[in-house]
Amino acid sequence: MTEDFDRILDQCVDRINRGETLADCLSDYPKYAERLKPLLQSMLDMQKGYAFTPSPEAKRAARQKFYAALDKRQQTTPFASLLKLISRPAALAAVAVLVLAIVFAGVWGFKSLQPQPPVLVSNPDGNFAFFISDEPNDIGDFESLNVTISRVSLQTANSSVNFIPDVKTVDLTQLLGAQSQEIWRGDVPDGQYSQVIIYVSKVEGKLKSTGQTIDIKLPGNKLHISSSFDITAGTVTSFTFDITVIATGNNGKYILKPQISESGSQQEPAPVEPKPGASQGKGNK
Image (cartoon, rainbow, N blue to C red; front, top):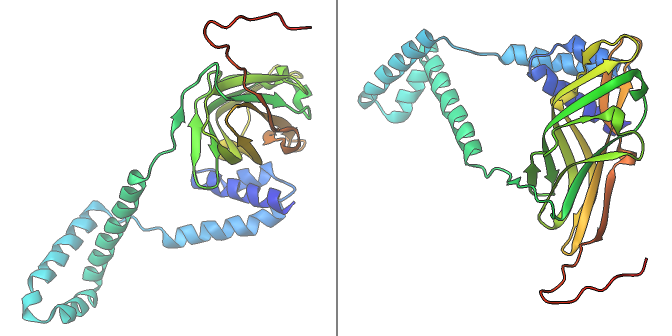
């Protein structure tokens, strides 16, 4: 239960940072609303308290005053000059603006220098296949439920790899129980993987009862599962990511969730290609 609450809290923080309201998050999680509300409200209060967006005119005036103060530095020691400078409110604002600009520029510059996770290329003979399935919960309410997947990320302890599905949209109503659909196959580096993340760009369902098409909210626009599995040489690994849809109450809203107990991987030996010129006999049935 603690793991579920922590994940939901993280998703609500992401949603609010993207512009959604506190009420939206609480209505999607009525079971946890009482615990979520004070934590999310505290986050909002802190954001308001630290909000600071100087106007372009204020920035220019602050820079001018800052440089004017620096031109007088020869009249006193550097340390005394700095103390005199920051004792003035206008100059202090200039210093704050410049420091913030340098910090943000450094952070974004550092991020841009970080190596990006490789995007893998599909290969019909690859060592890894990725499937989508659906655990029936409230899927019976839908005539169709299309999930559009933009990217899948496989995480190790220290790195990750990504791939773009060849099949980007799946209808969960066609993938009940043991049924599944392969959306990508390719070569994935050997190693131990600990988490799978699906990034979803759109969820659209058509209700059986009314024929109405509705957009289904997905907190964070992603689904993730913590599941340890190995990819090793000489084997083909298949991973099935099971998704389920659940009604959040009597308000006509639904939410997608990963079904961890029904998800996972399995391995089988890679097919052995015959050597050139070798004869192939018929196997016994």
